[in-house]
Length: 81
Ligand code: SF4
Ligand code: SF4
Image 1 (spheres, rainbow, N blue to C red):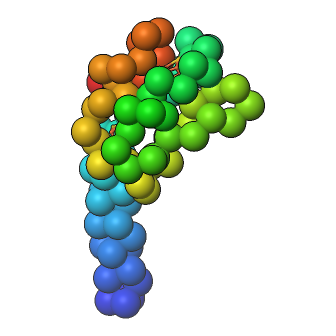
Image 2 (spheres, rainbow, N blue to C red):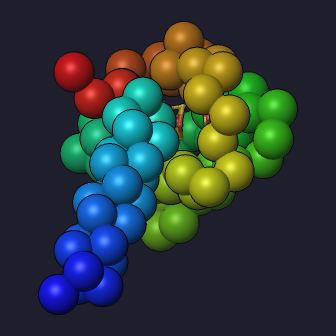
Image 3 (cartoon, rainbow, N blue to C red):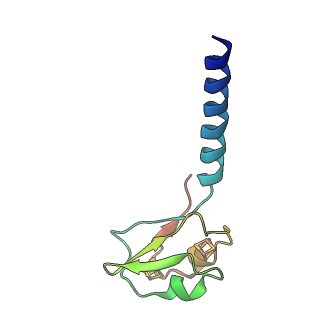
């Protein structure tokens, strides 16, 4: 019984940590992206790639500098509200 409570608490903490980590990560609105690659060039850690003519952000590499958000001419990269 005690063991299962500990496991639930650990899973909750991990879930909250993942949510907190992703909270400010920018995301690409693929309906607005035109594949111009400006964001790719603006990213200091190469966390953005173009896949099928649309930008994709690798969350695990992103350091949340927001260069891409400021750079995108289509305002296709945003942060969660
Ligand atoms: S800068 Fe904007 S429009 Fe250009 S590839 Fe990046 S997300 Fe798409
Ligand atoms: S926020 Fe910065 S590090 Fe993250 S994808 Fe955009 S340019 Fe790259």
